[in-house]
Length: 197
Image 1 (cartoon, one colour):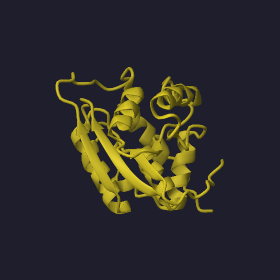
Image 2: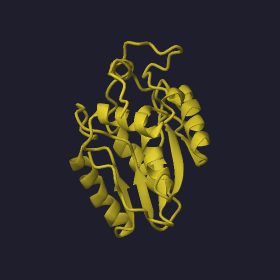
Image 3: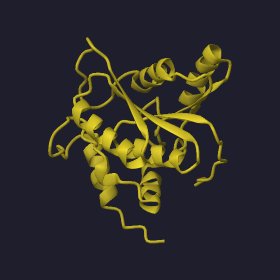
């Protein structure tokens, strides 16, 4: 796994923060690189929005970064599972709210999922449209796009990412339902052997 990146002093990075493990790791990834990091949470009608927002706030507070909160009114309630166009919507909303002439918009997608919007091809396609809008001044970054979920989990252990602050239940339950795909993913991660290297 490639985990090194050049420091870009003065670079503005906006991380899409969902309150989950992947986006928390993405915040850590950029905060450790000496760049200016901000978080953006978007309520697009997901059932878990309130608890995700609480987790996103706690993560951003932990890392000492600002968080912008965007809520979409009038949208339908989303069910658990696949939400068509979700990551494309989040990225274009982030572009609208970026507020800087240049920089990076980052998200914590990873490999080995059934979702079309969690791939290098998806990032390249969205980047092409971003380039039309910004002449290449705003770049997309998905530092974990070639990693599997277990790789992000190991990264979190190594870097002491505050996983306990995160929230991952698609149904928005308290306690988490334990049955949705996100809960099952989380349960599988906790079942992995601890990484002590």
